[in-house]
Image 1 (cartoon, each protein chain N blue to C red):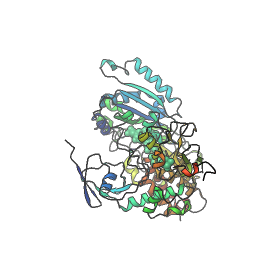
Image 2 (tube, protein in one colour; image 1 turned 30 degrees about the vertical axis):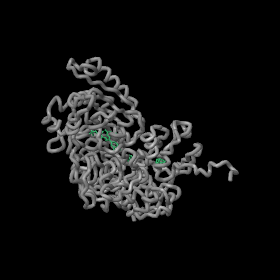
Image 3 (cartoon, each protein chain N blue to C red; image 1 turned 90 degrees about the vertical axis):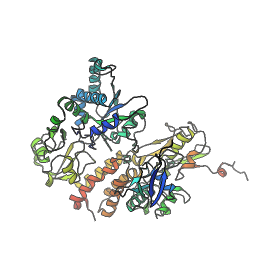
Image 4 (cartoon, rainbow over the protein chains, first blue to last red; image 1 turned 45 degrees about the vertical axis):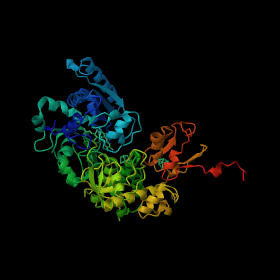
Length: 364
Length: 224
Ligand SMILES: Cc1cc2nc3c(=O)[nH]c(=O)nc-3n(C[C@H](O)[C@H](O)[C@H](O)COP(=O)(O)O)c2cc1C
Ligand code: SF4
Ligand code: SF4
């Protein structure tokens, strides 16, 4: 796993092999460790995990079982977004099939190892996708973020060392186990190893889910796979990787889909959603909408995000010019003060809009 | 054998601390003043208010000192300009959410003054203004009053009730700007729930959102 250099697909791109090492290296008093699959997929415009949970549930369960085998976990949970009613039965059916085949439960395939998986329905909150909030929600508590450390790898579900992974990350594991690290790296030569699932929004001629190599240019993805925009519209900008991702103007469409090149433009791969805005999009309205989304979804734990995102929404909502110094001081407070990547990440797309579309934002 | 102590430099002063000590504890041991709002040394650190930000090892990103553990040789700067600027902005945001200025004797007012902000100035004096919390008074308890509009969701009352008293009478509710506290889950007053009237919540509340009824208010009407 370390050689394969699988990067977490949930947004933070943390190397999975390193995280497995942390969890495997713990010494829990009762020997119990836990694997949690994060299927809360809340990014607007993202339906990657939905596809995997509904169409490839065994791939996800196999990834969990391989992870459990490696780190020494006995229990697993899949946390499924409540807005995905078809994902629950698909996963439950797959778990039942795996148990019947002796692949889950006590003494898996006569190995003496036990591992079983429970499917858990979420309660409808964006920030519950954040791992500490997810673990709180999984225990029936209010879905708010907790300060790390302790990281879930050290103290997670009911205090046990817990490996939390995004669904897509786990779906990469069976390939690595079957074909090895070099075959995995060869999927994206000269770029981040493996492949990435991306999903295109309804503005494209052929919206949908595509699997691409890292390093593929966004132009190839948008024009080649997506067929460009519908009804003769022209692309104005893209938001890649969810609401906390920066916004890339159409002039930078040759940027490759990969962590470093996107970061150069204040953007990220994130979870892989690609949302196109056409020439009719009002960027001030977009900025306001993003702040409103952030404020509505803030878990309310830390003060900068709890109050600051609401103030940001109000600042952009008042008709007329926006005081740039006030906006930027607010963005800095959110970025450097927030407890989690929600409040700390929402300024990224606003900063892109400030940089590329200052007149539309009416900054003074 | 006790574990080896660590050495931490706070604003140029070396202090020896036990492993597991937070930067906040080390800073206070060194005599530095670090303002806080959600912290109470009787309770587990919470990491919510972000007012205790300090500079660490010369890095660009300030850290919350209440939830960051000391490493040997750590260099803490409680006057780091970025940390002070961001923490001060957070306090300004907090003043902007209350419909009226906090009482001068409250911890919030003192923290505001420590950042050079005028706590008496009211919500409109903040750089960012907008909605304030709607006034909502819960005075059904014989000794305790809850003014929801003064609540800044620091969680201290809930944690004091859970961790100090073990009564579990209070709970955090809502999310984002609507976050608040309530007694019980179903709109009961806390006295109907599991409250034992210990007053730990009122004692720790930094804004007087929970206070004790003044004894004078309880005197029978007409008593001299
Ligand atoms: C506001 C917020 C929302 C998040 N939502 C999700 C999510 O829906 N799905 C997910 O897998 N990770 C989400 N994450 C990231 C998780 O905290 C965590 O990093 C991830 O599940 C780890 O898995 P990975 O290493 O496989 O990426 C979110 C993080 C934040 C801060
Ligand atoms: S940044 Fe927002 S979502 Fe994250 S802990 Fe703070 S209030 Fe909650
Ligand atoms: S009532 Fe007071 S102590 Fe309780 S959360 Fe609100 S401000 Fe904090």
